[in-house]
Amino acid sequence: MTVAGTVSMDMTRRIPAPRRAVTNGAAIRSRRNEAVIRQCRQSDFEAMYAVINDAAQAYRGVIPADRWKEPYMSRDYLNHEIDDDVAFWGYEENGDLIGVMGIQDVQDVTLIRHAYVLTVHRGKGIGGKLMSELKQKTSGPTLVGTWKAAVWAVRFYEKHGYRLVTGQQKEQLLRKYWKIPERQVETSVVLADRTWFESTMGQERLQELMG
Image 1 (cartoon, helix red, strand yellow):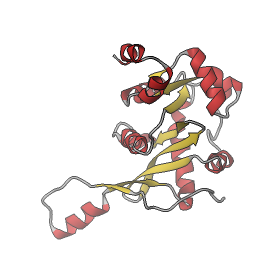
Image 2 (image 1 turned 120 degrees about the vertical axis):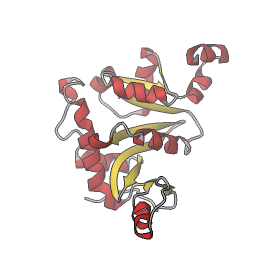
Image 3 (image 1 turned 135 degrees about the horizontal axis):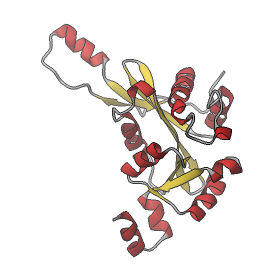
Image 4 (image 1 turned 45 degrees about the vertical axis):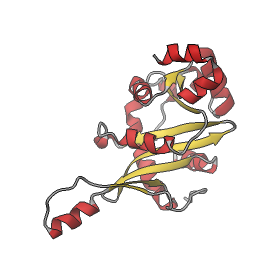
């Protein structure tokens, strides 16, 4: 199955492995172990599909049962998201794709979409590195949506500077910027970055919210 909208690797960012006093042979192995954050390519499609559906197992039994599917994200839907201009970036280590995160410009905001890290690699800061990389590619307001019941995801985004919007704002934002069913609107939350809050409320109220 082909993937539309892929681009070149010009934006690749390499993260060096820790330096060690090593022999020549070990130095070669160390270079091979460096991690890379790069935009996903057509050839990454199956790896992206695998990462997303492995990581999404965390939702099983947590999100409403009528929102769970197997697989959680089908190949057709992943293709649909790529066709809809979600640009996926990946975290690659030892030649393996182990984390993905998407970014999508919609009207006057940027959305962070589909953030997933393989289960066995959670807790290593990979999601945070992807988030930091994608934030560097935005200049305007940024929003992210997730399941209300996925409290770990909410905490992750809060750790990276996002704050929950009100219930009324959430419904307005989800209907304006996302293409999701009403049931998902009901069971989701939206978090926004400081830039979004600055554009929608006074400075005094923003300082109070952000602490």
